[in-house]
Amino acid sequence: MEMLGLFPVFYVPEFGSAWLMGITGTIHILASHTSVGAALIFAFLARKAYKEDRPEIYDYMKKYGMFLLIFSYVIGSITGPGIWYTATAASPRGISALIHNFVWVWATEWVFFVYEVVGVFALVYFTEKIDRKTHLRLTYTFALASVGTLALIIGIISFMMWPGTQQFYTTGSASDAFFGINTFPHMFLRIGFMIMASGIIGMVISSALKKENPELGAEMTRTMGIISAIGGFLTLFFFMWYIGTLPENAKVLLGKLLPDIIESRLILTAAFMVYFAMAIFKPRWISTPLASVMVLVILVAGLWPGEKLRESLRKPFVAGQYIYSNQIIARDVPGKGIKSEVERVAQYGLLKVHPFIPANLRTITPENKMQAGEVLTKIACSNCHSLEKTGKYRPLAKLLPTKDAESIKSYMKDVIGQGLVPYMPKIALPDEEYDAMAAWLAAQQ
Image (cartoon, rainbow, N blue to C red):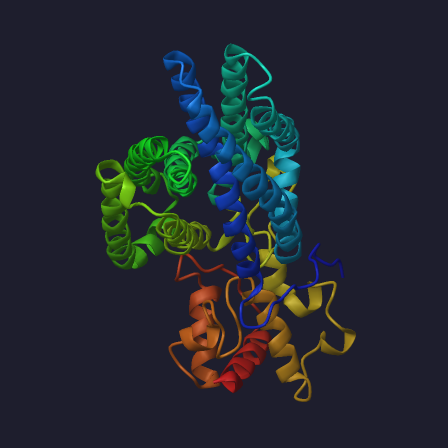
């Protein structure tokens, strides 16, 4: 029997595989978002310093640039490969889909990124060694390269939510995959957040600068407060546009989560409005410890929930609305020569068509039923759920509405077999595989 092109399951106890990628990604995103936002801020500050002949602003830019070198380009460069490693382990077919659709887009993005790395070194170390007009032009090109990097990556990430157009499935074209109603609202949403985050981090630099130059430190704190407030407004505005461009499965899940999202976002927005107002009207009140705490708040209470929400809204897919989170191909993509695997799984079962199943588990017996159920559950569910009762993220045992094996089986046949819940994969399994999974899940209760 021909096997499916599946890979071994990568599972992290208590967390589930996808959340390890999410944690790494959140740290990387704060670093990369700061880089892009700071590039735009640098362009603004360099123009202000040049037009107003204020060399002291270059001192602030140099200190911020040194921070960028360490935070964005060292931490970002470490966590970037970390995302590739964890994503490839947790979702190999998802990564494969992105590479096969966007290999030249990614190559172009790397050209922009190399220019960014060279540019930030030049901005920091050549500040006092080149004339101001050349420095201004260098700053502008650095900002353009940063935004270019963002635009290319956003097209790829937006494809993970759904393709740009329905023609993609027929043509397989990178442009049909890249450009869609979700791409630009997503990009502007990110730019707003990047500006806000960079302004918040900029206040750490300006608050420390007050010890050397109180007037400049207060002025830069006020400026960063205004910039952060503008970025926050753009984030909220484009978020409303963004949620209107989501696919139906995402809107269903968003409807369930929206009350909690609104409550938490209102609290966070109120807290940062007070902080930004303090920075604008009472800049001397912003101390380095307070500014550092607010960076931590935006990471833990702002960025992490936002990224977790975006990852959740993609479900049941991991890329292009044709690869389920558990790596099974959910539909035909003639433009890429891809065939749906759902029918074969329904006919033969996962144990028969998965190439990495031990020979003694390919046929379920009373003796191996529990072990087969554990393997099946890890293949089918572990990319989105932790499987232990004490699991940290979406523990499957706690989410089941029932505890006995027969009821669990009936529930699974409705939810995943019939696809009654749109954010769960629709995969029918042979009856004996439902039996084994239900028996193992019931034992976990």
